[in-house]
Length: 433
Image 1 (cartoon, rainbow, N blue to C red):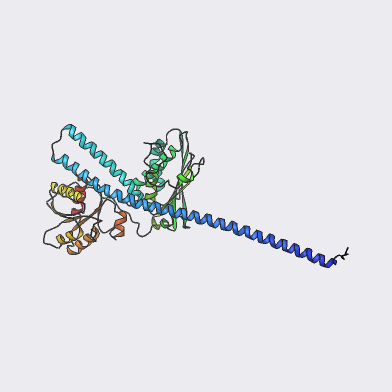
Image 2: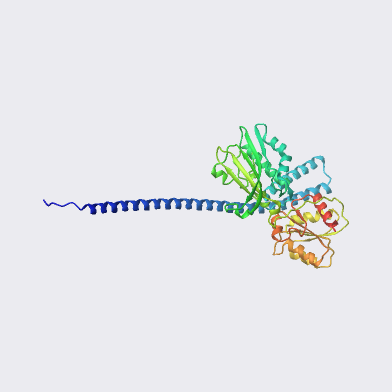
């Protein structure tokens, strides 16, 4: 048996110190690794959230383009339907029963026009008649309507900030959007509850996210509608602004309420936020820019008085690529006593304008085929004949008109329209100095 002397005390201490150092080093590295993993998880979660928001934004934009195009086509169809119904009533003797059928068809066509207006609202392509308004004043004016819409089982609270800034809105469209939010809140509280409509002022600087492209720094009027209802799970909340998406039963909702709010607010230069969770109610918050802080491209489109006077035989050039719409408009104007010329595209229209025939007014569709838009036709007509009158028309136009740089240059008349409305607008423009 070999005898081994114990190590010197100083060597043992050194070994213990070395072991403690290595243990501390391993612990620190483990802590650093845990911290790095936590940061990586947070980064991955943020990336996934950003990707989801981007996908949702792109999906809403794609749906907006699709619905805007569909609404435009339907407006052309409805223009033809309404025009021919007007012609039928004016030119054909109808029995009482026949007149009843025509009126029923007309009511359905006008309902279709309202539906396409909601689709255009989501696609931010509707025509707005905007003016500077006090949101608090608007809310006080419709408070009674909101209370009746909620019913007796639901309490309505109003918290209005007296310092709220003025905004530029289409009051009729805004009231409709607010009523949609109130009705959604009512439907989320079948056993009763409470809705609070609150206004306040915020200085806003966008931080990115889903709505970043629609946000502009500045002072905003904030309108929040908060309910104590059922709330929405994440999968419903993610699709809440899509048109025709609804969780309500058959016949209880079109799925266009929130989409109309979303499109209108964005078209007004603002944005919408949705906060909801199951059992915690829902809050929809609208941000609208102060009137003086609106982007330069956001201008008011003012309504004009009607004029139902008769014609004195002026000549109108109708430029419309849709054959049925063109034929209907030509027939309507001829029945009103105008001399009518017609062109199916911009090139044909410019050929007529360059000729010797007198033309008092051009009624031209904004979106035209074969490379020459209605706006270009209007501008060229003004160069060739400075005194000529112009009316632009389209199934959607607010966005299209602005993109062609003609938002304020020419009057605009939206499709679909009834004969009386068309006659009034043409007379008004012809009589303008």
